[in-house]
Image (cartoon, helix red, strand yellow):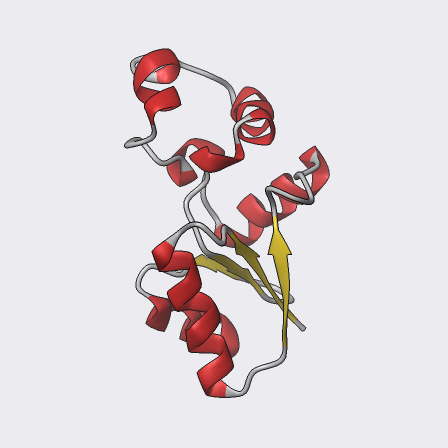
Length: 114
């Protein structure tokens, strides 16, 4: 079953939910603000995305601009930063059995659905 890591306050994330619903696909919604990430879960997501944690960070967020911009962190440090500041994570992220995508635009989900 697909998982969608969702921020209900994010318009793009809501479009992703709608896209999956419209397709009639069964999926699990994970609101990562209510159920915080754990490091192993994030490591698996980044492995399936095939990207480094830093590549999934939203650079327009105030916390990034104030505290992180221009600094260098290891992958493990980025994972901890994301756990402590989940708004930094790009969304929605749709995770399948072997692959995941940052679903921007929602049609990108097709890479995981098929």
